[in-house]
Amino acid sequence: MKKYLLLTFSTFALLAFASSHDTSAQRRYVEHSEVEGVIIEYRWANSDWRDSDSPLELRLRIRNRNRHAVSVNYVIEFYMGPKLVESSDLTELCIRSRRSKTGRLNGMYYQSGTLSNEELESEEFSWEIRDLEIEEVDGCD
Image (cartoon, rainbow, N blue to C red; front, side, top):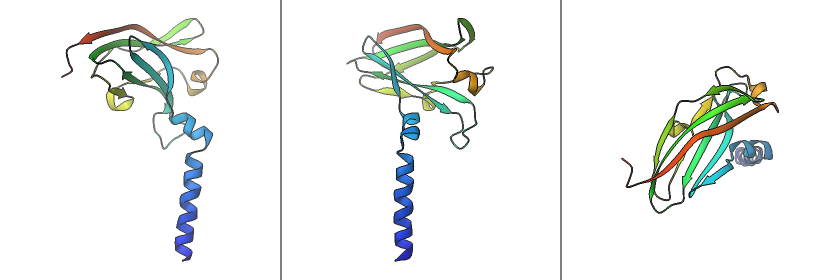
């Protein structure tokens, strides 16, 4: 009986910790923009979920609300103040009708090679989506 109570208490404690505001806020995606029926959301996460000091990376989720597939192309740029610090390679995606693509699974994560976590969290830092192209396509391979 003691083992059962201990297991129950541990489970509830773990659930309470996991659903606390700080941890759930980090897991949630925040809407960035909506263009032509495509919703772009983002979140910041540590590159290694086991290490809270690991480099931060920007993760995107792109949802296609259209009744047709779309091709989505873009570049991510990191700025410190007005100065462009880094720019990603062109990301090219095809998203089926009423589907989404998310974060690491689809290569939609962007990590700075030069900026520290402190710089990424500073008020001077900003990021932008550039060269965004959304085009209706017949389907995805």
